[in-house]
Image (cartoon, rainbow, N blue to C red; front, side, top):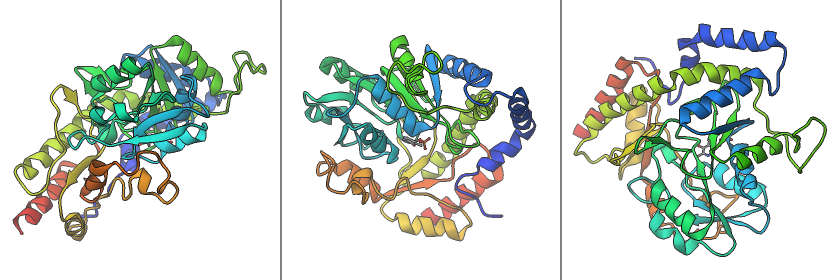
Length: 368
Ligand SMILES: *Cc1c(COP(=O)(O)O)cnc(C)c1O
């Protein structure tokens, strides 16, 4: 058996090569390369897929977060409450627009923002809460939304890992005031380059983001507000239109692979991701927990299987943030998790044989 890669966006391209190539050539031939028909249509299709009113395509997921935060009024002097268990982009976006990130701990089950610890992090300066639906697992979003409403602060969902995840049948990204998505190539919906989107049911907020993403323009060459350049390009949008049609099928395949892993890990010393009733996990990553994660990592490597760690350091443990983020000393669940996590290969293009190979390898590890 040849090496099983941890991620394989090229396999996804090859699986639908004809469709992607046609979209690519079509975008090239149309001759309009920035904010044209493909972006417009993709925005309509992605909003409709999510059951949201508006989608605004932007350059990447980090920008999507920064622009969403700016649209809800976050800026210098504002505090934004989020988690340390995320991609650094979450905190980078908050700081990039001059706001202060405040960290709260996660729940051990969802590994997402703990609503029970949220209220004590909120001050008079708090302008927004940014829960992250990490690994594709929806956060406890209804409890978080109730707290956001009670304190009159904006709710901004980081959906970069959760395209298609649901709570009570409703897509994540539609619970808060506004949401950010990333289309980085390995995400559940990934471009062949960078891309991102801001989604909202609030027309005024979506309108703000439309202005912010292009120099504050509503009419060309007239800046109504101070904006930025963060545009999704036509080629990526055309590719995303093709891939969006496959997203539900791909997510279903991810869940099927997860079930196979679950079966091997049931009642073992390796804990599988929790399944929360009423939620549908998008299975962006399948992250297990165990005491001896290095042993498992080496065992898998010996069997030609690449595992990952998401992430080796929590945000507050990264050199750039060490010791300076409010709340950093009160994250016991986050710190406990970081010593124990390992991500198994999880992408729809894994073949049945490859999944069987991973399962057999896990089985041998558990029996040893
Ligand atoms: C990928 C990711 C981002 C950033 O997206 P980019 O497109 O890489 O800028 C933000 N938040 C989370 C949780 C992510 O996984």
